[in-house]
Length: 403
Ligand SMILES: Nc1ncnc2c1ncn2[C@@H]1O[C@H](COP(=O)(O)OP(=O)(O)OP(=O)(O)O)[C@@H](O)[C@H]1O
Ligand SMILES: [Mg+2]
Image 1 (cartoon, rainbow, N blue to C red):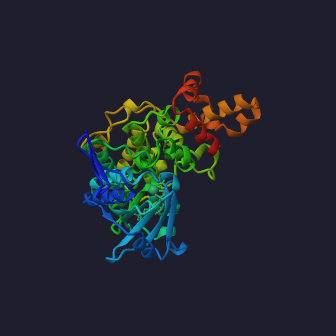
Image 2: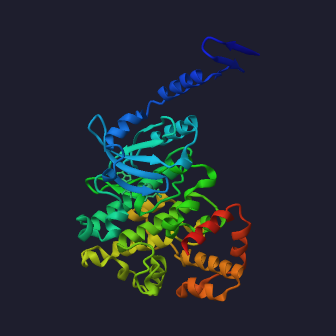
């Protein structure tokens, strides 16, 4: 049965009120917006004022989802304002549904979402502004000498444990659980007390399925990608745990997962960690910027946990709540067997092989293959997975944009 309500422009179908005119649609959306009580809806005008009309001076970053501006809101609070790129302009209703989910997820180690703006084509997120920037722009960009922040051992340990707790919360306490998909140094922000906050959780849900980070932003993210996710598109919480393991080793070593300025054998952090682990010399990987002032046993334990999180088989990686217990010493790491981690350079070799086969140019292989990992490369099975999986298209993008 269908009942028309002409005056308001609604009709009822199967007991549901459906807007049938643009005005009714607007009323309907406004009602829906009003029903979202966790999130503040900002006027575009206020956002423009807060950012001084999105001035270059206020721009603090640019990521895969769009540009980020620093702004001061009407109530005086500082905010990080993320203007989502065109690709993420999903419908108002879908956008608000996702925002509502994200805004309900609150934890001391997660960045707080203040609200959003959904006027016309604009899709803007407004976050709590974190004073001490991201780990990639501070610790990994030269530590104290560049940022003025002293990353002593206890600060680093606190950051590692905080990030682990935030991720354990997303993985194990939020229902349905949230897979972050993009754990990396630029998504770890620091507040004025250097307490870590994970940013951008839930954002992957705002993007169309065919336009995930993996296909578009992989160059900056590649070193954090779990092999099974990169090659076969298998996305589970264990992919985040792999990324966390890489991040953990970066924090302890004070270097990023890949550094092409170093001699070839030192370029890949995971490879280096495994070599040193096998020689029982892990302590050599600890950041020399600490000037020897650190708890060597604890630092090596953290590196071992990093290796455990990056094991090639997802099954061998611990859950995040176990990681928290390992980091804090509530659980012993020594009983855990550690095998060679899943090295991303193996994956690069695969792509190299594929590229070489496609072009039939042996010279390509020479140029792209990382000599230190070539002996460990597996062949047939993974190559098949590469081309046959539903994710093969983005896997291809991944490496054409990286090599
Ligand atoms: N809440 C915030 N407070 C302070 N600075 C922030 C905040 N959010 C983002 N930034 C800054 O903006 C930069 C860009 O962030 P953005 O998330 O857009 O890019 P990204 O993290 O490099 O990549 P991705 O899009 O993959 O997350 C960050 O590195 C950080 O310096
Ligand atoms: Mg980010």
